[in-house]
Image 1 (cartoon, one colour):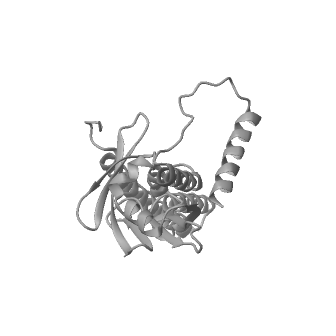
Image 2 (tube, rainbow, N blue to C red):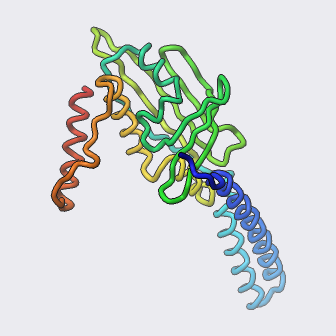
Image 3 (cartoon, helix red, strand yellow):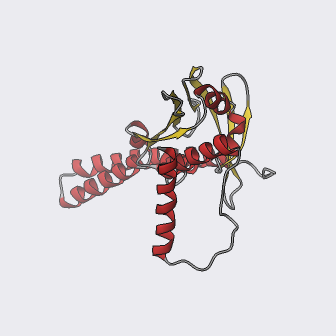
Length: 249
């Protein structure tokens, strides 16, 4: 059941807007101080000029400039699934089923033909919500969706279904693109995509493959085991990943 409190998305948006305004104010104040200092033509004035410039640059990198020069970062993964492209496309297009294989997603609700509301559970912090719109829909070939323009989170996702010859299944290519800001908005986007986008893409594909081929997602979560050292945990991850790659080939 979703938390009764105000969704984190709304409170986060207000906090970001407040911090953004504060960054603009600090940048302008630093600029004024810097100009004033350099026009004094003295040692103390030069010190004020340097200090003001540093304040303006720091504030700008935390908000205003970061919003303008954010870098688009894309993470891509692929997996081969022994099902037809049409079956995989149909299942994936029903976004409300995403909770069955995207473990980080709490719920998905269809708003209309093109828009969907996503909710992600945050440990100890309620839920995070955002809205996406479909930007590409080629039946049995590809789907793409992105956060709506007014969203605080710049996120685009795309999936392609490439059916292989000789009944060797379908290659599913999944990409996640987000705008990596040097300032405040990056922290908000990180809550949506998670701390490790590459792992999220990999796990989503792995779960989707298991669900479509076996009808369920195998997990060792909750099973008892003895304490593992760092090497043991690393080998477990590596071996499981190698097995996934072997089965997907």
